[in-house]
Length: 312
Image (cartoon, rainbow, N blue to C red; front, side, top):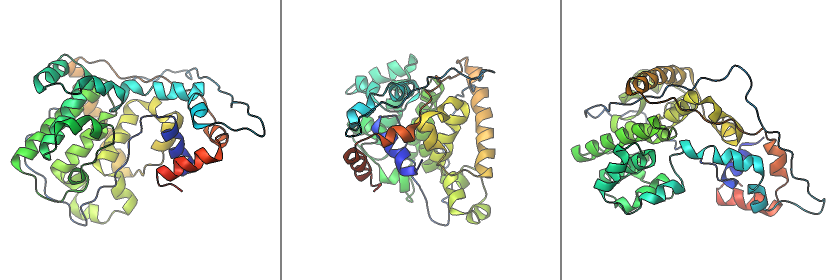
C-alpha cells in the first residue's frame, strides 16, 4: 500500500494520528538549557499474550459495479470504527478535551491531581501556551492539531527563564498524562523536551560530531517528538496494528534511535512501577485489507482527501 493511501485512510476514519514534524536546527545543535529535569513517571509495557489475539476478519463491503463507497459509508465499516475507537483511551487529542474548555487553572489542576489524564493533557498544553505568550484558549486547539506554534517546532532562539520553566511544567504534565494512560502524549513530551534541551545532542543521546555525520533519515529518527512517538509503540505493541500501525512503519528508524528507546522504555517502566500505576494495554485491532477497502472509495472522495492534505 502506498504512503498516500495509508495517510488518506487514517485521515478518513479519524484515527488519532500524530503528525511527524521534521524539526531541525541546522548543522549545529543549540546548547541544552539548564533547567531542573522532569521527574518522569513511567509505564510498564503491557505483557503480550502467548497466543495470537483474537481478531475480527472484516470482509470488504460489497458494492455494485456502478456503485462505490462514499466517505461516510467508508467511515462506518465496522472494523475501521473499532480500530479508531480503541485509540481513544491512549490519544493525546480528541473530543474528550472539550470538557475542560474554559476551566480556570485551579479547577483544571484539581482534576489533574485526581488522576484525570485528559486534564493533565490540558495542563501541559496550557503551559506550552504560557511559554510562547499564547492565549490559553488555544491549548485544546493545539492538542487537536488545529493550532501550530512555529517556535516550538523550529525555534532557534534562546528561551527566556520563564519560558523554560513553563515548558518544564508542560513536560511534567505530558509525562503524567502518558503514565496515566494517554500514551500518545509521549510525542508532546518529546517535542517539549527537544525544544528545552536543543534536540538529540542537548538531550545527551548523541555527540555533536556523531550527529553531524548522520544521514538525513537518521537525524529525522532522532527528532525527540519522533523518537518518543515510537517509544509509545514499544510500550504498547498493539498500537502497531491496523491502519495507524502502517503509518508507524513509515517513520525512519536508526540503530541509535533504537538504543535510546530501549533505555527510555526501561526508565519508563521503573518509574511507573515505583508509582504503583497499572500497565497500559491496547485492544487488538480487526484484521482488515485496507488497500481493498480504500479501492472501494469513490474516486472523488479519494482525490479530495489527498488534495486536502497535500498528497496529490
